Image 1 (spheres, helix red, strand yellow):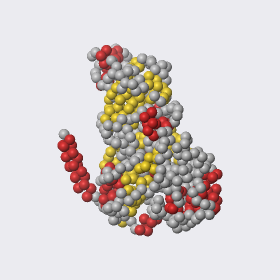
Image 2: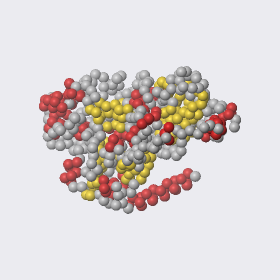
Image 3: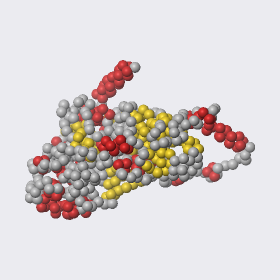
Image 4: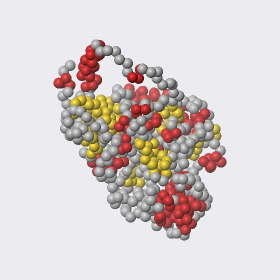
Length: 420
Length: 175
């Protein structure tokens, strides 16, 4: 193997061929050496092997050594249940968010719902208004799909004049990815028999704010479903137990949790959460409404703010990309603030409207660099720079921030968030 | 290649539709009475508004008892969203997004208050208290007079300054 050739940068700042770690040789050579050394050493038992282990458990928990991998919660001082719990993206790998770390955004807390009492009503512009209980819904044909859910307000600190200095998860962690399983909404709406004038539905949850929101019926019939399971187990209370509406690729607020009612209508209801909130005020004074789709976004999760590089040499940059419009086609990484770009390796399978893990090898020699990633989705949409996004939308839109994120690595290995 | 792709998508759609026709049909017909009890939705044209009425004069008392601790005196300056008292326009930096400057429909104020407020005791206000507190919030934003009666007839007619301020980004697939 020609190490000199493989370590030739493919872009400025030390970015290397994305397939470097996939090739044989470089990583293995060190392992072979230490295996030789072991052959002559005295046999030793690790501490963990000297006593019998812990007994079985009914429900497993993370290792006690991982207690710092938690959701960071921020709530209204006058109402504990009005706020956010962020997914710690900086501490996670792969593309599935553990159920206990899925982000939360509640308007008035997590309701305690007895599944024996819970019902789902479908009414309005239908020939047959129907009510379903859980026992009935569990008998319907189901589908499973992996998809992200992202709050429309995720990353909103990006609109601030000064770059926020906080861990990645507390900036971009209102997005998570799960495998959801449930009943296609189309099946239930077909049973209720939609009337010709039906064009929207209003979905409502059973929480203390009876949160409701309007959803176009064409989307509902296309790929929405009523989830009962999250990553194989019944949905957690904070994610909508026992029923959550899943609207793939669309802002979190329309993925109504604790779903209790679907009102079929010919027009939107103009709820508070589609007028006063979840709309984006533009510099012109008008506001974007029913923006729905979460456009392509990517973030480098490692290294990111709060991590520190402690040596010079070879690293693997790792991050997440996703798009509400479909599959991620490519992720490019820059180590010189966006002047030159190198293609990252995408972890397969690459699924539509789902987290896609990307990685690229990188050689750091101790110089100051600015790391960025940009996602390109299958529609050809390219994640914008912050300057381009702000030029288009100003800084008072609050929702739907998806600009490129820049991490500055200082010569001492410390990482800060910058606008570049 | 393109042709083959669209053909397979076509086949997939056909099989899905056939599958969709065979469902367990376990849903139970819902009675009009049950739907009336469950349906809280209120539309901009007034559909869904209940009986009852109120003015800002009584609404101020309701507000002071149930809303003021979070929303502040006169609808501004406390921990919760600012509802009134805008000093800036929507094009200013920063803008003030109050009921008077931003909310496009008066009916949304009633609907949201009825379904979600007050946070510590949602659903506790009766319809006349809700009309009254809605009237008070509209009065604080100088959209109605303090003695104007708000009810199912008058509330949808309140002229909201930002009624035309929203541009839908959604295009229906059939359009």
